[in-house]
Length: 170
Image (tube, rainbow, N blue to C red; front, side, top):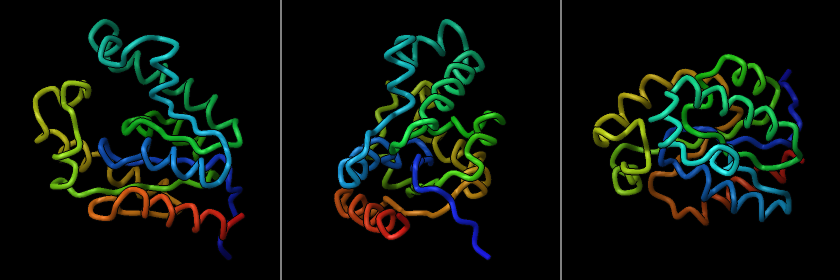
């Protein structure tokens, strides 16, 4: 028997540059629910992510991220997580039983999308993207309720497809 998960929060995960924020925002609008981006919540409360990485380190950022994710997951909303949020064991545990949409993307497609100056983990170039994605892929796959690839379709169409899928589950 297939596990029935509540639709909300509807959580977007995936690698950097997959479109979690842009698509999540459109899906939330289509579903008429709030949209929460955990990276933006962290920035609003603690300042730029790149500054947190530089001054406090990645582990401090992951703790702030874990707290932001926990707060966002308590809402009836569409929630976009940062690409590495799934690295924290407590976050993975919090995602159990939630409806999780994995957005995938090819390395070729993401190369045109990523501004490495705003991505602390990619400061040495987009070659790091594939390594990071490969390291996280099994975690993403294990958490996903469903998957949508964002490599070639316009984001508007992807968002429509996800909203249609979500409405079919409601």
